[in-house]
Length: 419
Ligand code: ARG
Ligand code: ZN
Image 1 (spheres, rainbow, N blue to C red):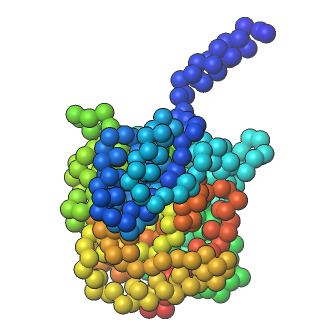
Image 2 (tube, protein in one colour):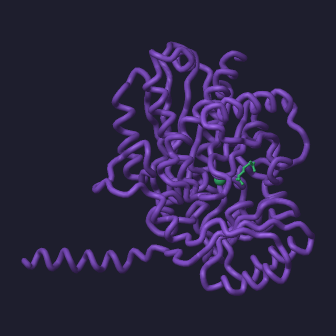
Image 3 (cartoon, helix red, strand yellow):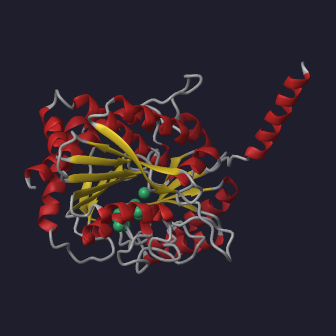
């Protein structure tokens, strides 16, 4: 050992000790099926007394009768939760026996220094270098820009796909990674860019699309949260912003848009997973996206936002049960897109307006974009239906992205035909 090596080893150990990555050994994910009001009350009380991580719906405030409730329970509360479940008679199943081993199993093993790949969950630094290289690979078809910085000072990179033309083209805006732990979502945005570049020139649908329209792709919306979900807490959902008066960090970016803001299905408690933030667009990430869409409002014809999980295709409204003015058209496009998706591997999707299809939840980007005038506004909730939930194995990235491409292509082709 040279002195230098000793020094390196020392700093390595210090870094390891400081890393403090959350572990989930012995934790379980339950699916509860509340069938009585008493069950709903009990689940809400449970959430108040112990630390329960809601996987679906996104928080205890959204629990109602006759919906499936997926909760991630820390090992130390298991005895208590079993007792409560058995006594109350709530129907339940165990979906994930051990969350830590599901996390460990999520990655395809092997592959030493893991470089960027379309079939793995890339880190932010891998995605950032991929953005640079893909943008320079084909300058006539793709360009990049930064739409602002995140709370922690990272760049929000936006890719623009489309054959350059003299005049402004109508456009589609797609974002991924609003919620940090939904890793399949950024994987889809990367896949989309790859497919678009590959198919241009050979596939007539993609060629047509990129000749006539521009497609903006924001590969990761909530970059700080995404980084945190890789380095520290795999289950992180929100942004990473701080607020005075509380030690809880982060706002739910999909409750932070100015669409019925914080009226329903969102929380004003900064510690909640569905915290709506201090004010609409208090989150710089939401403001950057909203500013970009506002400034390009005359060209953006469709807004597509990608989440996971549940296999849903949603459209406005979520802040109200009222039907959107374009309800029947949005419904028929959703129907076509879902059946295109199903045609590949038989994956079944449910589609409809957010409020009645899942639950009312205000402050979402889809409702905001729609009310701004972007008629074709859709939210995808990708695979699966809860078996792996947020911990979808990397082996499912390819089939998930392939089938989702069919649905997105259906929507963009429809928009193109109806310009
Ligand atoms: N699970 C997503 C969320 O809670 C659904 C979004 C649907 N749209 C909405 N505006 N709530 O953020
Ligand atoms: Zn989400």
